[in-house]
Image (cartoon, rainbow over all chains, first blue to last red):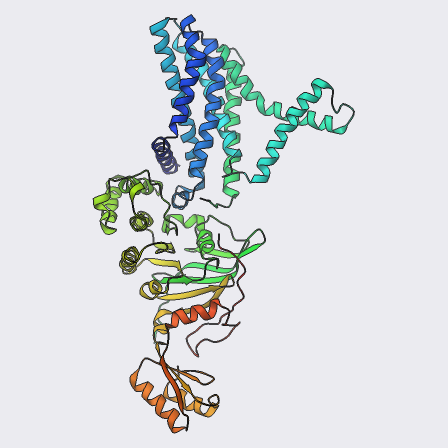
Length: 257
Length: 330
């Protein structure tokens, strides 16, 4: 197990290095600069508020995690992967290595954002927010980023065949239509309405951990339900990673240039 | 008298089938490669060579049939296998030194031993001077040499090599063949897929020709080399059974087909055959050197002239089966 972990971390380090050298890291830098400029700089001038910070970062960082995961997975889905996958690292190490790379880059982006906001706040309009508050908001926020990264990883061509990706897309569309149908009373009398509603209910269950995590991050109030929320988030990450691994191990590996 | 020891099988496939959608890539491939052997798998583009290698590496799963590498599932034998892919696609944003070190770590190696292993491999493939230069600016030949180094970094016992000289200029081809020739003497078991006959002749102990998505012919390279010689064509009708019998007493391995007699590269033998023919009243129409036996066999098999279970040569060629190709290589 230790040997496997060492190989996986080594591959993850290798991937991050390649990601940086390829210049793809500019995507994160640009996103952070734009995010800071649009959302945080005005707030810093008025006096930084932790709830506002986690409210915005709680959306920005998981979105960034999604983009980073897409880019990293595309790096992993090239013919160059053959000489890596043919080694003791194996499929599990390869997949977790890619996932760790994406989450590490996301974590680094978040740390950079936090640092700039804290330094900016100290220089422009000092407001005291305790380190405990930062930690309490950061934990559910990063777990949400981990959930999003794992979910996006599953949707990538390396794991999911085209027809299944299409199916997922159609499901999302169905849920969207379900929302509209509820609002405007469409399909009320047909079976389709019920079907869409059930699909929406299912998605709501899947989204619950993310929504609870987001609320915990923004409130950063650790009441009796906080630990439960964190555990649910962690469970969701593990379930998604397990699912991803199962899918990848069953896949035939055909990299196309 | 004790029978000579047979080396253990390293690769064993039996009745291997693989299909991509409606297209067959392999259909009933049975192949054994033994320890220490350099086996050349020849076949035209689309014959299923790369598919076979990817099954042996565990990237693809056969639809039917058995595959064993060192007696185990391919994925379980990964640590003992080195792979040189056909196309030189490596992570070119790294330097050769960084790359070899990283790949060594993915194979579970580390420390000083890995470092010294990487240095000696860079030396072996002639990349020491460029060890700290990023690979983005490397020529195809340099990348292919690096490919050989990466395949060897974890000291594998089995090497799977796919079209090692594909896309290289003659100088690059020479360099790669020389390198592989050196490896041959190190005792690695090698399965090399190619359609380059010169490299097969230089490097391999045994060859197999894929046609119709299965093994059509298997032969020892030494035996084929002995077939180099002259073809004597007589005038008039086909040779009678009586003359054929006389010729076979001169050389049991002689090949007779219609009006043609193929004699090995042996002056004494050729003279004897000529005299036998002339003494039998035959008149010689033509006497010409034969082409490369491997090339001839390759052409015969791949254009479908070698029909099912046709015996290529009286004693040394194994049973063959051939079907018209319809698959494509992925």
